[in-house]
Image (tube, rainbow, N blue to C red; front, side, top):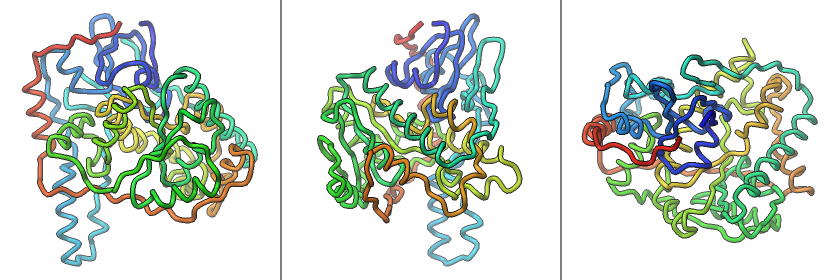
Amino acid sequence: MQKITSLEIYLKFKPESIVETESLEDVGCGIYPCYYIKCENKLKVSTSVISLIIDSGTFEINHNFKPPDFLKEYLSEVRLYFRSIPILNKLFKLPWYSTWETIDKRIKKLKSFEKVTLTDTQILFNPDFTINNEELIINRSAYYIKKFINDIERIFPDYSHIVLTGGRDSQIINLVLKLNSKNWYIFSAQPNYPLVKRWVEKNGINVNRIFTHDGRNEESSEDFKKKVICGDLYADPRHIKWMPTIKKITEEFNDKCIFWGGTMSSPAHFYTGKHRGYIEKDKTTFFNNHFEKTASWLGNYHQVFKNFTGSPYLSPYHSPEIWSELYQHFDPAVITKNADLRMKIGDRLFEKPVWWLSENPGPKPYTYNFYINCYEMYLKYINEMVGQGRDDIVS
């Protein structure tokens, strides 16, 4: 095909497929991670680095790719905590690895808003900070959030939609008036589930069913290894939860389902004053935080979700249109320190006042009774798989 976008890769193709194209473009700030290798007269693209390595039949290790040993660092932090060492916070490592490199030096990660061809790469994002009115931000946000959700409903009319619901970002998705509410479900894990259930009931939200999860780690060691392989070592696997249960839900719907989440990039948030620290010196720092953190941290969850379960995981805050028509023109300085526009956006979408929760406890990261060196396991798997080839290449 002549050109393709990151969103199309996640919506139209099976996980870990190889897609051949002349042009690849990111349209969602890296929330839908893609990897590419330049061949003689085309790009080969996938949601998986390993798939591209297997397809090539060879492996050229990139010794500059040095992701943290997340499990080892977690165990070290726990030991420091119980020793009550006061410098613990200074030693804390970010739970993601920001890089556009991969384990193979021929394969690159598509950057946020990057367009790649065989001969050229360019970043197609130029903020102009011209939207500096709260009411305009609320109106455009509500319009493009609803438009994206309804557009996906039209493209996949016989699919079921499950919203992973916890805090306000995801609650807003449930407030959108759907084309067919019978196709919509909620997934909410402990400790948020009873709060979300109450919120749904208090507001009379029309939802087919609420799936729940007790919050306990259900992964086997094989599930854990699969999760690491699906994520290509870009984020702490302890924070990627529920995959075996989500996989069962996809099977219940015969793989004809789409998951949704309120993925944003706190604390550099578009709708609250939490981002203020990022604009004190330069407004572009606000966007740079999104470009790196979203792609490396939050995008990795979307990648693992797709590759592990087979179903796409979408965010209405990362549609092509909301970025081109709102965020690219957004002036972060307009949002004051204590502001939170999300409730006004939710009220606008629901077309009446919403009763909002004041709590969002959130699930804790998973703990494990085993230690695995993820890098060594990942490297071993690649060496075992090289030469086996692929038969699902799409041109």
